[in-house]
Length: 150
Length: 150
DNA sequence: TGCTATGTAGGAATGATTCCTGTCTAGTGA
DNA sequence: TCACTAGACAGGAATCATTCCTACATAGCA
Image 1 (cartoon, rainbow over the protein chains, first blue to last red):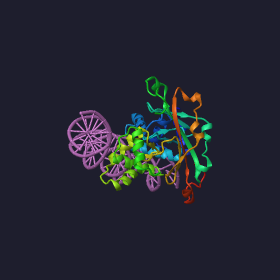
Image 2: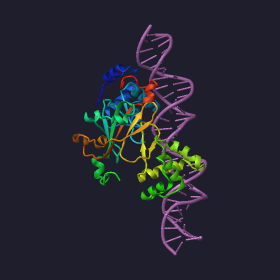
Image 3: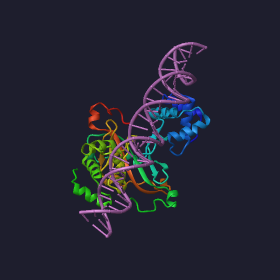
Image 4: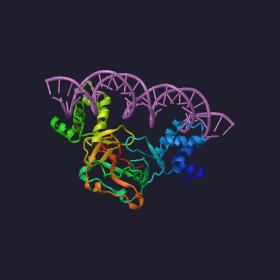
C-alpha cells in the first residue's frame, strides 16, 4: 500500500523511531511492495532515488524498524532474509518452485495450541504456520504436479 | 535413540544411500541426539572418532541424507541450520531464550488448511507450525516473564 | 543556531555454506 | 578374490549475506 511521507513520519514517531530520509525511503519501499523483499531488493529499489544509500544502512534500518515493531522478518528455509511490512499476526504460503511468499490471514490459524502434556513448562507467546506448495504458475510450468511429498 | 550399525546400514540401503563409515557416524550422531544439532555440532561429535573427517563431508552427507528423506533440516529465524533425525511429520517449540528446539507431535496440528479463498490456486503439499516462547529454565532465569508480545 | 546522541557510508571482517580438485573406496561383475 | 568405476571424501579456496568498525553527517532538542 502506498504510504505518504506524513503517515510514515507519524508511524515512526509513534514507535519512537528517529525520522530520516533514508529510513522513510526504506520503509516506504517495503510497505509499497506486495512481495516480501530481501534487504538486497530494498537496497536496489531505494538506491534509485538515493544513490548514496549504503547497503549497511538498509540492514541497520531494518534492524531498527524490526525492533520497533514496524517490520517483520520472514525466514524461509536457509534462504536470505525477507521482510514484511505487515506486522499483524498472519501466516505464510510459500511456493517451492519460485519462492514467492503469500500472506495468509485466518483467525482459525491464530488460535492453535500445543497439547499441554507436550508443553513441558514452556510459556508459549506465539506461533507461526508456514504452508508449502506450488503456485498456479509453477504447476503450469510442470513443477509440483507429482505426488505430494516424495 | 541409539542405533546399531546394522539398523543404520539397513535404513541407508532402504533409501538407496551408499553406506560409508563417515555417513554412518554422522547419522548415528544425529539419531543419538535429542537436541537438534547444527552441522558444526555434528562435525565436532563425529571428529572425535574420525579425526580425518572434513566439515565438508558433514555438509555433503547431510545434503545426501536430507534428499533421501532420512534427515530433516530445521531453520529457526536466521540462525545456522539445525538437523533432525526425526522425519515423521511433526512441529517445533522453540525457546526464544536459549534457542532449544523441542519436537511437538500432535495429530490436530497435522491437519490445518488454508481458507480456500486465500489459496489462490496453490497446490499445498504440507505445512509446519513453529511455537515460540520461553522454556521453564529461561522463565526461572527471569526471561519471558513479561507480557506476551510487545 | 549550536550541541550531542544517533544515523549513515564505505570498507573491512566474519562465518556458515558451497565449490573445486585430486584421491579414495563401496559396490558390482567377472 | 580382483579390477573397475561411479560416487564419496578431504582440504583448501571461494562465496556472499550479514555484521563490525570508524569517520563524517544530521535529527531533534535546548
